[in-house]
Length: 356
Image (tube, rainbow, N blue to C red):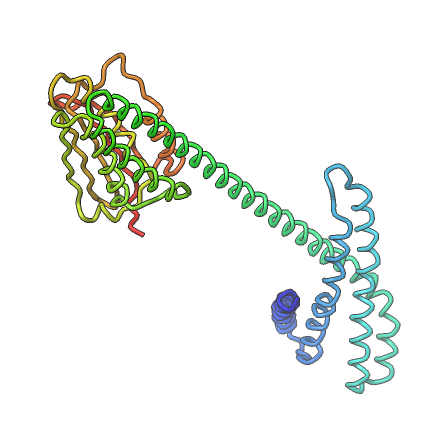
């Protein structure tokens, strides 16, 4: 409330100063003597009376809001109130001015003349006052319209953010059973060949599941945390494939601190194993690179398998990874799959670098 009154008084003071300067300039340009006290007091009392009446006008405007479906009655009511408040403002203003003239000791004949012209002056000034009244009401409606527009915009952004978060969480949760199913399938295959190795894989899987559950509500992690989880997953796969699977890491120190979506690399590595290792009769290599350049974090996962062909289709892992990146970064990211010149598939992700 204090700020509200301060704003009204500040506007009234500014207008009073502007119109005072205007009146002084007109008087001087006509070669007449400037009655500084009366001229300045008249302008200030005019705008300060409006300052006092403005809260009443705003309350009335809020009370009779113009609606799309019902605007005629409120409009007529506002016009009627304006026809009352504008002569009332002029009457108060001239009564104050008359009292000021009495205090100044003005001659009785001059006082008599001013009393006679007050009714006519009130009627004349009411016309200009109605414009001031209309501007206050229109200003109120313009501000209310802008405020509601901003509220709807903020609410829309908030709802879009919640929806995006829910979609991201849903996409991430789809990866958990997918990852678990594929890992258990690997263990079931190994059970037929080496029970001891399968037992170690189950223990390692329990560790991974514990990490996964601990980070279930986390969308972003550092690349270091992502790689720690990935190494645990690769230990299971290397136990299964043994000498057939070799993994190389080439990650810069700066890249380790970059924030990445949780479980963003595991589906890429899983895809490389599925299409690049299992389809080969011999050993295969998976290369994982990460670097920072021009404030962008680039992550690459490549294999030396057959690469892309006409039969290649994106599975759940790649599809969800692409969807998550689109939700999180929009056009600020890239997600590319291409065949390497030396053979094999190269998957490249670039996102804005954030080391918070």
